[in-house]
Amino acid sequence: MKRVLLAICTVLLSSVALAQTGPALLMRNPTLSRTDIVFSYAGDLWIVSREGGEATRLTSGTGNEAGATFSPDGQTIAFTGEYDGNVDVYTVPATGGVPKRLTFHPGNDGIAGWTPDGKRVLFVSGRDSDSTRYGRLFTMAVDGTFPEALPLPMGFEGAYSPDGKRIAYVPIPRGFAAWKRYRGGMTTPIWIANLADSVIEKIPRENSNDFNPIWVENRVYFLSDRNGPITLFAYDTGTKKVTEVLPNRALDIKSASLGPDAIVYEQFGSLNLFDLKSGKIRKVNVTINADQLAVRPRYEKVGNRISWGAISPTGARAISAAFWPGYPPGHWHKRFSARPSENRVQS
Image (tube, rainbow, N blue to C red):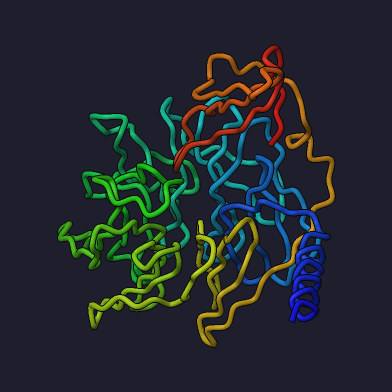
């Protein structure tokens, strides 16, 4: 019996060792076109074939670029960037090029999606809100004309119905995105609004965290922790029923996005494709070979952004957390581990 257990342990340890031979990547917020996937990594946007392979850097601004979303025709990518010292909405051709700034408000503007015809981008902004805790959804033509507010008092994420007459949206921001199974007063619902009269239909829930709506034909897909780890659910607008699409008893799915015939999602920093027709899942293997200056250990002054800290038992080192300025949606932060006199970025 001992020999059997020893053999099993040896096999398991070998499997773990094999699984860790490749570098671990933290690819975030993927978006999908018919041929490519764009994702955030190390503060920049990267593009890779839908089949996987080596990714190419798409943006290289000094600030963070995130929240990329393909236009319906797959030719343009809208994203949230901070090239000019402010958080705004930009577009860039899918083939690469100079990013074009769309919004110029001094507050933060974050990309949320596109209208079905691909003529306007959908974004969230606090420009018309009485409190900085809330925002509204706006649309703006890609030629940069003045933005127009949707007829909704609040909104942070949204997905249009195929005919553009309705929108599935999250009315309030996620208060504690990093908390597991949070059930306080800021859990997020998903509502469906008729844009002609602003009448609301609420997707059934019992105080779960529902977010990231995706509209496909007569179904609204979304992420939720209602059954445990965050996974993909679907609401049938005809039967009014919610079903679990991807049973998940592992790590949370962090974000998802619709593309032609599939949904791409992020789980533990990896990218996966869920085929809408077959229901099959395929992991997308990605490699990144670049200088990646943003992930190198470096010294940085963070004294005015320290929010938490602790001293090691010997008193020789300290660890602390520093938060980056607000960046919709969510918050940016990095961990710092250093001797008390140092501020060196570790991850």
